[in-house]
Length: 426
Ligand code: NAD
Image 1 (cartoon, helix red, strand yellow):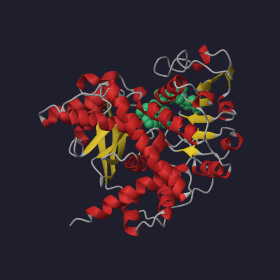
Image 2 (image 1 turned 120 degrees about the horizontal axis):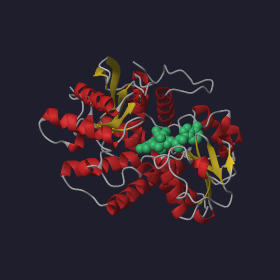
Image 3 (image 1 turned 45 degrees about the horizontal axis):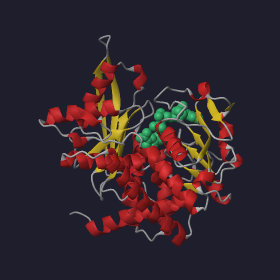
């Protein structure tokens, strides 16, 4: 079993695995609190790891077999919750790390869920639509006993989407003999998906950016913002911040960045979903991707990939603060360097948690057989984000610790309290 004492330090600033990152962050938060060794050991290890084989018949009549995983990290505060990935690098270890992250994220948002993650080690681009559907239905059959609206609720992640969730819901419902929309979130609204789910992670990034600017006495109307990645998270965050008066001076995709020091109109730049990788095509002025990271702006929002800010790239950063849109965009070493440079980093588990929060609303709507308007979702999200922001701000001030550590202490305190009061069965 992994314990708090036997982790290896990251040492060099290679790309740490999600599991290494999740354990390091847990250790740091535990050092702030007086957490018992027993609870640390429980949180350092997943409750359950399911590994399955997923065979499919290909369109040409041949067969392929893939490995699938569902890791259930912790359910002390409620059913397991987390995404399903289709990506060639999906593995047991990656799923464990990402499941741990979900535990911290749900706890910092005070959602009644624990953490899970999983997926299939496959490149979905190599599959036809029919093959993807077959893979999804077979994977669902393999993990059917472990998931369910009161057990474990999957959601979309890398390589999966609302259609994948619709197939999971259908396959699960057919096998259970009744329609059970609450088994997954991120579904199309026509079968119980929530309004506002798609834009929610970017929405919460915008809310946390707005609150952080206010905290540091920067009027949002005077703020300049650069956004790395113009997918769902980056484009929704950029557009809302623009609506609230901020000046979006740069946004990027894999090809480079659109830049205008007097401010871009983010509605004129197609998001990844509207037109993939079109940022530089429509831009009047283009700069290389690494220059975007070094712009002298009030806020830098990395919203593209993990490990984007490393020991090497972080030296040139001139932004006054960083708000993490992507999951894990800052390596541990880069994080320490930013701390030394006094650049606040508002962490992913708080900033992009709007996604899992609106997933919670979707689940509530499904199990109660009611649907909420977009206005209601927006109002509830605003209130829940502000509540989480307040808890993290209080920990940041009272403990005089960086924002990430503050978020982890909030999460860890809640998890520890739940473990203590529940005790150990039998
Ligand atoms: P997406 O696929 O919609 O878009 C990703 C964008 O990043 C694209 O514009 C792509 O061109 C760009 N990009 C990729 N590599 C880049 C690079 N090296 N430099 C600059 N741009 C690059 O993805 P998304 O859904 O917006 O997710 C982005 C990040 O946010 C991921 O880390 C994801 O895990 C995380 N996240 C997503 C959600 C969600 O529900 N969408 C929720 C929480 C966290």
